[in-house]
Amino acid sequence: MNILNTLCLASVIVVLVFIQQAFSIKCWDCRSDIDPKCADPFDNTTFAITDCSTRKLEHLPGVRATMCRKMRQKVNGVWKYVRSCAFLGEPGIGGDERFCLMRTGTYNIFMEYCTCNTKDGCNTSSKMLFSPLLLVLIFAVLNGFR
Image (tube, rainbow, N blue to C red):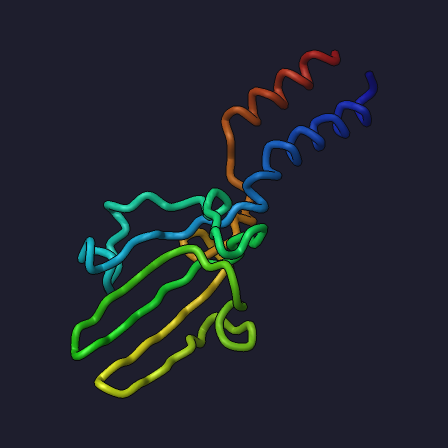
């Protein structure tokens, strides 16, 4: 097999290894009323990041999570934070993640919704991650065709 065919095969392997990561969204999933470390400042040392592709909503069949969400609520002076996968909407306001949607209501109620999809923890997993398995596979393919 010539070098061109070997490179093509190696490229296909790379794409197949990373295809799941490219379409997966990983977000923090917690509530400050259950664990105070979920509040701001956020301490993620006790939380595992959640692969949102495994999450489904019964009332929205077929809709996938495409973003991460952080909700900050103040009801009668008590703050609560919720971090989760987001299924609907767009990142930020008008596509700008620097801005969050804020609402104020009667009886001392305040809500802030922030959505994003640009990085792990608030992301789509679009960056390539090194995989030792990938290195072994490429080495085996290249050595097998000499």
